Image 1 (tube, rainbow, N blue to C red):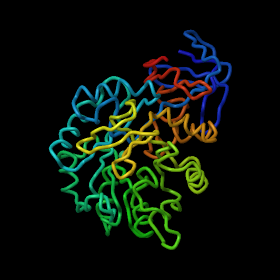
Image 2 (image 1 turned 135 degrees about the horizontal axis):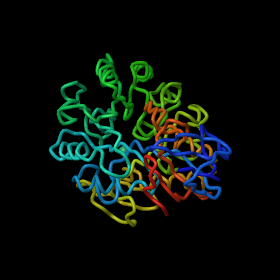
Image 3 (image 1 turned 30 degrees about the vertical axis):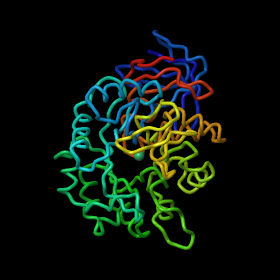
Image 4 (image 1 turned 90 degrees about the vertical axis):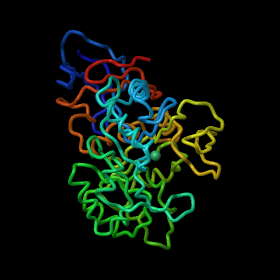
Length: 370
Ligand SMILES: [Zn+2]
């Protein structure tokens, strides 16, 4: 298949190139390509398939709630341009959590958006405010229990580095090829710097979950902004983080070190109102989902919807393209996707100028057309 007359987004810029797809991969990219089975993209933008690395739930279900729910989620994500994702189950060791983790494992390989492995939302959080549970002790055995007895299909695990003072656990996790993800930390700057040095190359949705910035103190949150090798997840709805704070993050981290996440919940697509989320009362209102204390609970927008929100808030399509389509693969070191260059998977998203998904391709096959 030869896609012509599109604007290809490659490494932060648009090019008027054609793209040849063969055997589920990008075979060739460039000007003046000839061939049969030609598709005219009518000047639309083409991005690498979106990779959402933080999804708690979607379309009425938590990730792993049942085997069927996982299939529904995988099938529904491509309409929002998401071609691969990391289910993000709460891993608290409860029977419910272990069942969800098992169901996620069981769904790997099902049709639709690819499950790249889990981002385990561990209880290794350290926040000294009342609505957070006290942190769990960080240990190898404990982690294996939380993950259901094995680390198979675990891509990332949340941790506040100060809970692992000698960084033995962080080194062990990184040694398994799993990304330790810094979040919910009240640590000292050296805790962050040392964790990054030991392999924690990503933060959870920044700076949500961290204490507010105090300019008198020398904090973990500030150190995260100063670590050159640290990627940052961002919930880019301009509610979790103000648009100006996002601009500050972009200046400090650069456009290639911030990756958008939906942080989505089962309530996506549901109307405003009061809901029960896993036994907790939440209120969905004005584009946000909050608990009864007004605290943000999860994201309330589809992945592509956040792109349009950023556009409305004055961010360029080039910046948005990097955050939403290219940076997640870099953060996770994925070399088989995340860039429209030969040899990578033919996962791509065709969008119009308003950043609405027109078509989504996974592994060389169209899986969604608007
Ligand atoms: Zn989350």
